[in-house]
Amino acid sequence: MKKIITLLVFVLLLAGVTACGTPSTTQQTGSSTTYLEIHTSSGAFVPSTVTIEKGQSLTLVNDSVVLHPIQNGTWEGSTAKAIQEAGAPTVKVQLSSNDRQSIGPFTTVGTYQLHCTIHPGMNLTVRVQ
Image 1 (cartoon, rainbow, N blue to C red):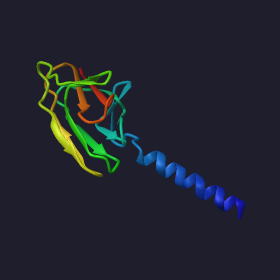
Image 2: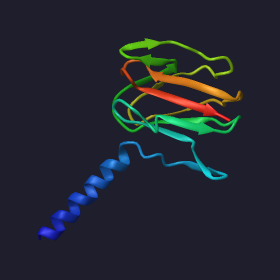
Image 3: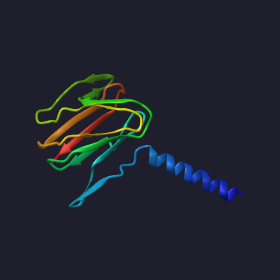
Image 4: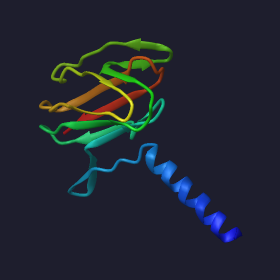
């Protein structure tokens, strides 16, 4: 009986970790892995930095019941800074509970910042090569 309970707890923990933001869509590019899906937990992007190829888009996946309004910009400490770098696609999406939204394509090589406008410190860096 103790083994069954231990196994059940392990399965539930594994399911919880998986639901909290493991990137599920990847692309192998040479020797590196590109995440084409970025997941959100209640207050973070997973992963928080991604490198993609020029011309690719990303899919933001909300794995929580928390609303995430995502826009160009970044958090600096407790202050949200609305910034749109030259060449960045305009991002203004609302991720509702268990929602997914595509952003891009990212057509210009560079580094771009996205943030959730209501969760301090919730930043995403997109590097386009």
